[in-house]
Amino acid sequence: MSGWDAVVVGGGPGGSTVAWRLARAGARVLLLDAATFPRVKLCAGWVTRTVLADLELDAAAYPHTIQPFAAASLAVGDGEHETRWGGTVSYGIVRAEFDAFLLGRAARAGAEVREGVRVRAVTVRPDGVTVETDAETVTAPIVVGAGGYGCPVGRALGDVGAGEAVVVTQESETRVGAERLRALTPRFGTPELRLEPDAQGYAWYFTKGDFLNVGVGAVGGLPVKARLERLLASLRSAGRLPADLALTPFRGHAYAVRRTAPRRVAGERFCLVGDAAGLARDFSGEGIGPAVRSGLLAASAVHEGRPAAHAARVDAEFGRPDGLLARLTRRLPAALTLAAARLACTSDTLRRRLVFEGAFGMG
Image 1 (cartoon, helix red, strand yellow):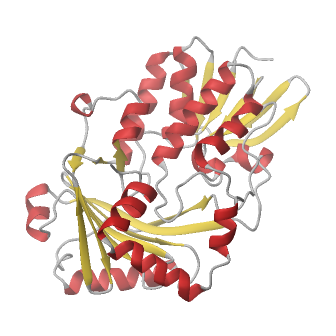
Image 2: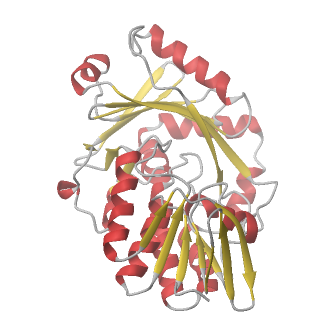
């Protein structure tokens, strides 16, 4: 057995949160990530006030892009509907900056961070867990999987199911300059969302500081690339994407949503957090909040020496995906589901409560 109390695989917000909290409590933590930070991470890119509170992070002290907003809009068909709050409800961030900041904080707390290290295999043995990389094999009593949808810990230990609902996205983030972005949209600094016609996802146009983030995500139905082409054509015709504005190449990624119970999120030797546990919020796909909160839960369970307790705590925090309401919702006819989605998005009260504050965690 090596000298590590825990190995964390994945250095995004979930993994860095686990490593930070454990190291701060005195644990010997090794964090491994295949990327070298700062790295591009696809994400529309905003965090709620709850996320900052969970991270014990003061927005005024954060040294990178952080765009407070107190409004958001949601287009349904040809109609655009805006919701406003009396104060800041969330903050736009750039994931490359945000993730590198959190990872650096974990290292400063005492975690050993090794970047550019790809995990090839994870094996549970009677005396602990073996984590194999290209360069070495490390062992520890517990491993935490925080490597996203394709996390090697989740694949090895999480009983990932073939029937889970998977969201596929295409998005781009480009440094444009705040002055030009202000000229392109009257809603500079706020998320502008568009419900997909089949209500199987949504598209977005989000200006934050000097950056523009454009993308679309959906679960099933029309291929995501076709959805993206439709979005870009609409934005160009409306003058929101001028011909001389070159966007960074679009990239895709996938994540699971907790509609069924395909993943085993904890055991005697492991915990899964964030997208590795399939915890992204349904409909919105918001994943930073669930990653951070589940990271805190995992850190507590590991610190107590009871990693298996993480499963019940995840269910208590995020709800069981196989509950009565979830089962009833899945059985609704498609036409009724579409009508309900449109109503929720166009009603001022429902849009605020169910969509922005419920699905996105704003407020």
